[in-house]
Amino acid sequence: MQEEMGLRNPLHFEIIWYLACMRVRTHWVYVQQGVHKLTQKNPACVSPYIYLVPLGLLLVAFIKKLQPWQLKNTSRQHGAVDDEDTTNRSILLWTANNIADTQQRKSLRVNVEYDHAVKIAWSPDSKAILIHKALENCVEVIKVEKKDGFLVNPTKGITFTSVHESDVIVGFGIACTGRFIMTASDKTDFVLWNLKGNILDKLDTCLANNNAVKISPCGRFIAACGFTPDVKVWEVRFSKTGEYQKTVNVFNLSGHSSGIYDLAFDQNTSHIATVSKDGTWKVFDTKIEFDLGQSARCIVTSKYNFNSAETPLIAMSLNAEVVAIWNGTSIEIFSGLDGTRDAVIDEFGVTSLKFDPLSKYLLATGDRHVRVYHNVTGYKISNVVTRSVLNGSNHSAATRERLEKLIAENEKFLANFE
Image (cartoon, rainbow, N blue to C red; front, side, top):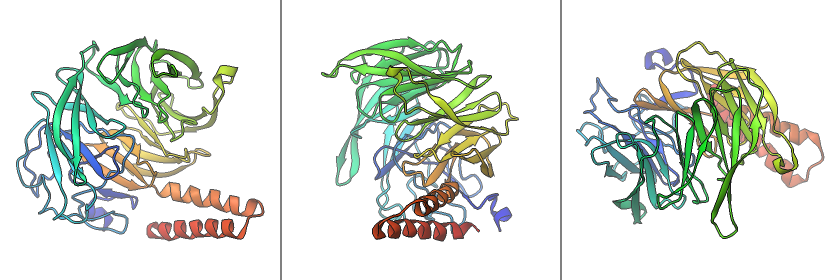
């Protein structure tokens, strides 16, 4: 049955057209550059320019065939995009309140004039979308309003100045504090902006080239990796009154013997995962007092299969217990606690790899699809950790009941994949 459906792993269900998540939990967004008419034989002629926003839950549409591990099977006939020609160079916002009810599902199209978006992010208050335009090579703000539980009236806001010499953007985001926006190219530069489009600072990573530049979930740090075997971490400092002061390189992550392709934070910025050209991936403990001279230390090192010309990607669950790596031909899923590989899923052409905010799902975009995987490894590790806690010391009756309930829920979920 799985072979017939093209499913190689019970963790996997396939989406025929793609949706990318946004910060608001009740919506999601996807970016398209030229959607052709969707047909039974050609179900996914859409652009690969899809990037997941750090917060929000991506939900699905167009599943080939309903299986126990799938979320919902939404009807193809009632979709807002399928079986019709849609305007090129647009952003589509979808309500996720009634994803299973195709009659109630809404969408909003936002056109990008004479260009298309290659990066997208939501403002912390979810009142604006930030996009990085491909042709103009700049940031543009699109304001949106909320009415009756949905977003309406998209209006073009300010357009930032184009400052990057390269049009390959490897870093883009806005701090959760709303204090700054970051853009970075594949050269060695990254730029900090305020929300009005004014440049706060321009910095040189001194990495020979940038492979990935990311803002930490806490909005305090920026981490960059590239040609050199180290990750550099900066602290973006503001005064008590909110005025930008400076950005300082506060610590580095060392241990790889070759360039680093990608990095990922956990939810509270206490761990950073890296994947390198040397064939290894690492997890670093970054919960340190760097101002007192403490250094981040590597706590996990493991190997991954790297035999592709593609650039690997890495994602880490919110509690750092699961690490996923796309190696160019497949996604390898590891324990973030000891580096043990738990699963391998065939997957080609991945452009973005992320866990949802609750780490229940692993999301992989690319090849005109988004594929969503249950985080089965996370449930397994949760059971091991919970059993250890349960057997480790004396607990109150209420605590023991809560832990036993969690174990039972995990086992019930895992039974679907035996």
